[in-house]
Length: 65
Image 1: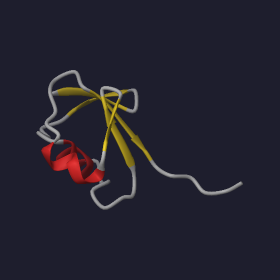
Image 2: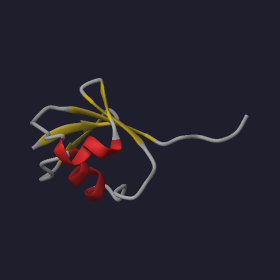
Image 3: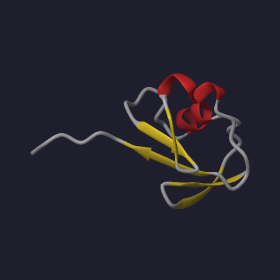
């Protein structure tokens, strides 16, 4: 399936947002996620199914002043 991950097109076999994060090496990372502009909490990622053309945003927290 084809998705947009942070604005970049990708091909993936991931069925859920949790699977996608794992495939991208972010399975254990502390990140914020959104699918098609809707925030997806960490606890809901395994139940968040993906479909062709979804827009995925993954944001890492930043530190500093």
